[in-house]
Length: 75
Image (cartoon, rainbow, N blue to C red; front, top):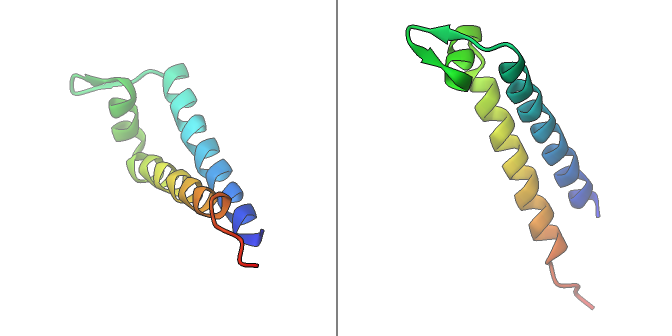
């Protein structure tokens, strides 16, 4: 049960970070050297590593939740 809670916390924090960066990039569009969209935004504000870290964090949490949800009980 404790691993499931860890997975939930990791997934929610990763998803929240991803969602925050994505929404902020939509609200504040940037064009840098002809590159626009989210890629231009990430390059301008140097958030590429944060963006990918949030994605990886969310995926790790999702994997932990899936493993714990489908683990067989040992009786």
